[in-house]
Length: 112
Image (tube, rainbow, N blue to C red; front, side, top):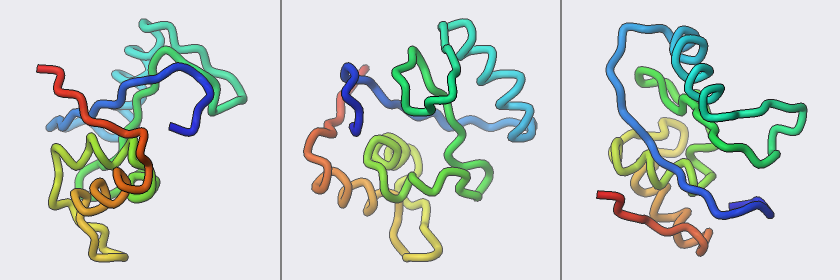
């Protein structure tokens, strides 16, 4: 999606934690990315082995691209289909369906 690199897989996880957003990034995400060979550079669009992000924390959207990028909306909608964009009234499921039609190269893969 928007990359000249190889195909890649997007996935989401829903977790319950008492950790702050910064603690999750510093204590968990950075460690996982480093162990899996993530190399950081000034080019935020460079190919990478792994890229972990927090899209929603609590009921707050941290990455508003979730409403416009199919590779974010589709997997997130499987966990939180009714999550509401308070600016547009669109649910995450509705955004995912709209974006799947717009970006034809997005497909769901059942991993189980």
